[in-house]
Picture 1 (cartoon, rainbow, N blue to C red):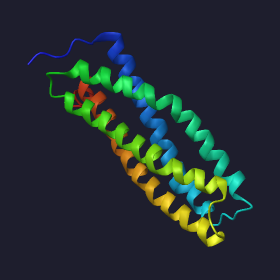
Picture 2 (picture 1 turned 45 degrees about the vertical axis):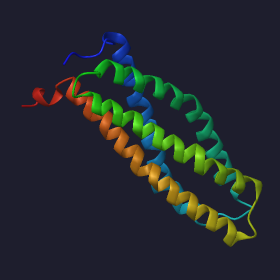
Picture 3 (picture 1 turned 30 degrees about the vertical axis):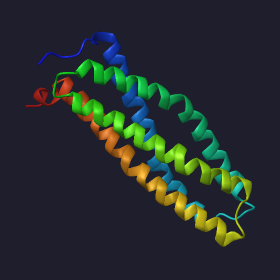
Picture 4 (picture 1 turned 120 degrees about the horizontal axis):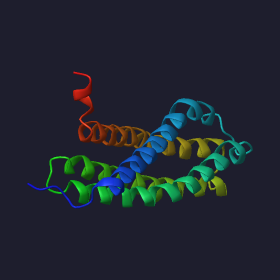
Length: 166
């Protein structure tokens, strides 16, 4: 089978950009899980604006710019690897960013809006929303980690990096 037609700099830039986006996504999810979740279990309506709203709005703004370019980069990698066995790495990268975007935009953002708008009865209502929010972000934690591993595996395979160490 012949490989796709996109090669050289466009492929390199796309793969490195996807790695950048995947690294930022995974890093954000790891920070959430290990550093912010413990403090958010104690959020109250009085502390939510500073400790929840500000970081989630900042992350949303950042990833609103990064993620669409990841879709383009993923498409370039798929086209580039069409006809080779590496196309599966590319498809898994694209599937990963689709999954993460669906969970984030489709399910988590509406919960963010409810929390920021104060749409809960009391502290327990806020904590119930946060528990659901954390569970959904756990899905993104594992998904972003898997996506990062796939793009790294692609780059290792593409560059035949394992052979360097044998």
